[in-house]
Amino acid sequence: PHAIGCDLLMWEDLVPALSARHRVLAIDARGHGRSPLPKRPWSLEDMADDAARLLDRLEIERAHWVGLSMGGMVGQAFALRHPARLAKLVLANTTSSYGPEGRPNWDNRIRLVSEGGLAAIRDMVAARYFAPDFIAAHPAVVGRIMTRFMETPAEGYLGCCEAIRELDYAAALPRIAAPTLVVAGELDPGTPVSMARAMAEGIPGARRAVIPGASHLSVVEKPAEFAALVA
Image (cartoon, rainbow, N blue to C red; front, side, top):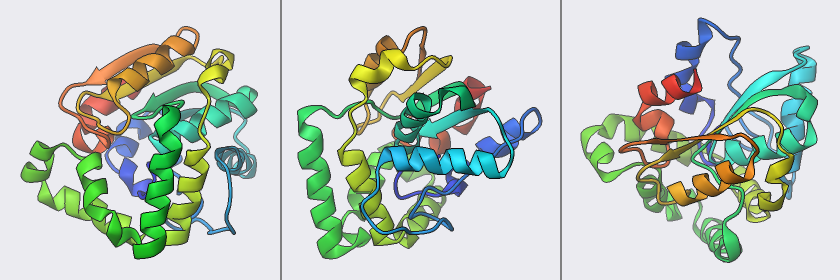
């Protein structure tokens, strides 16, 4: 699953890279893309159960999970709630906890979007998604991602903000049994390398990799490097 404010098209470079060897499912999180927009609030655990129901519907017993940012938070919930359904786990540009400043930061984002819609945070989000050099060199890619960001229903975005606000899996990481790769972007301001290191140290046997020059949407900025790590 994708980052908050994105949709399944965030994976448009990764899907063909993996499809030769794997059956690949790219999904829209609830309240995003073409997925339903249920009544708020909901939780990361609810979103993990969405994925489990999708696997049931498609008669898939076990799957590998590749999640970036919010998708990695939901991936932790999935690993803890549905361990028998999980083969391997990739947690990219994400965290198990934002610490004491997390809740006020998400409360502030909720306030901004509630008052001014996604337009109120568009520029801030773009600056967190992408490194400055990438923004300068690839304006069409940035424009495409940010157009889709602005198409996200505000209620869907707010529902996911409320779910992320409750994030706190740090103490539960030792219970994740799946082979795990934690991927960080060298320049990621939102989920920095230090957060990836903490996750990798908490999950038994986890490996960690840092993508040089990548910010938060590392799969968009560095698709070849990201695909090689996942493969």
